[in-house]
Length: 145
Image 1 (cartoon, rainbow, N blue to C red):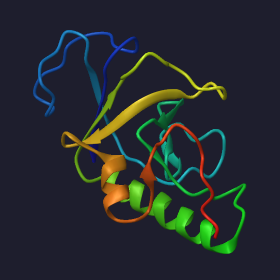
Image 2: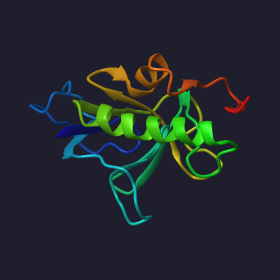
Image 3: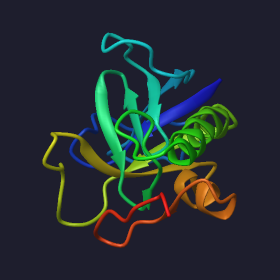
Image 4: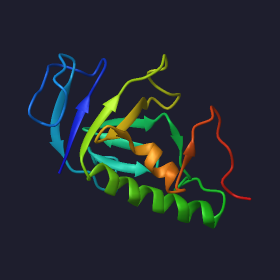
């Protein structure tokens, strides 16, 4: 089971003993991630770069993953499905921390823009290292060649 922590405006109080550094702006709770199946799922992985945590949609701001819904070709869909499943595994492998970074808080779709870390390492960087996502360059690039 993963432990999730929030940093930034979402924070309420400090928590110790759950694998997080004591921080007066941290909140943690025990959660388990799975794939999202409906819009009612509160803690789940939507796709390779978007999760829902306790109802809040979070876009991982450091990566771009292939689409699983509005994909342009079969290979994008297949890679997007693999990235989604792998992100579930990554998030369930340790302590999850959600960190606010940069000046933008939300994107044009109302998703919170955050770095999602597991055991102090960016979950996005793991997906990039495994070839399932790429570093966010500031704009979307096609996955189909």
